[in-house]
Image (tube, rainbow, N blue to C red; front, side, top):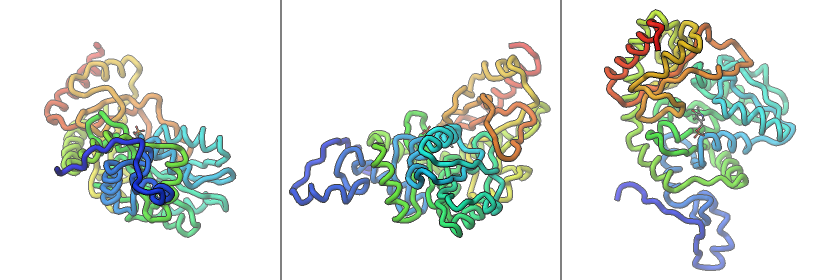
Length: 371
Ligand SMILES: *Cc1c(COP(=O)(O)O)cnc(C)c1O
């Protein structure tokens, strides 16, 4: 067989008392208890770590769990963390609620801050959490510049790399300590799995991530690990298709008078283009569109009647999605580029001509004023 088979387990049987006594030496690396994974989990962890160019990965039950466990791994009461202002909604909630509950102070930084992040560093700053491009507004951060400051101050850096995947961006090569993936999205690729991964740049970081996952009792289903591992086989080919289709949709959208701006760093006109081009090998299928202001009736007319695009939020699979950014993203640092109504598209694996025909009908509905 080619793919590692599914090994399901809770109880693991040991041959000798000695092996049983020493079982915890190998948690998350050897098969010692179902919670910490089986050969299926470890095969996926190894594959993700290889793609990320990292030391090793810990697989978690969701992308949200990977974010939470990575933050929990490096923080204690009295610490301060710097979090990008454009992080995924659940990440912001975790910081606002759990981090604050456990006595960690959080400052949100402008994703375009670059090396000036040095001004926000305090003696108790322990971690910097980035996401690039940012959720909903797609700002690209200067990751190497931020990491250089962090390294000088002994601060751990982590990044949510879900949009690019390690096929298009390898954060560890740019100085990041922990690369986080919602494997639920492109890695799984078929809208039927929840899984996450935290990849460590070094053995020392890996140990901290394992400790955190074990402490919080997080486990990953071997069946889901199998599916994500299988998904990795086609990840580069799928991404190329997502990218081509996104570009075709964007080209069409740019010709519509209702479209004020496209948020997608692969566009030369995008403010993040220069850094994206320097650091990334490609762009995925998710992008934002700032439309002329739409009232609720216009939003209903536009979104309620698509026949190819679907209305849903977990992107990264074969289906194309169109959603209004509702509620609008929260921003505390910097000014979001939102002079109109923000909508988000995911380009799936359908025929681009069918998608464009669907868009043509939606824009016609918008103009006609009829549902
Ligand atoms: C979806 C997503 C997550 C969360 O992943 P889940 O597996 O849905 O918990 C985290 N970060 C980003 C950028 C995401 O898009």
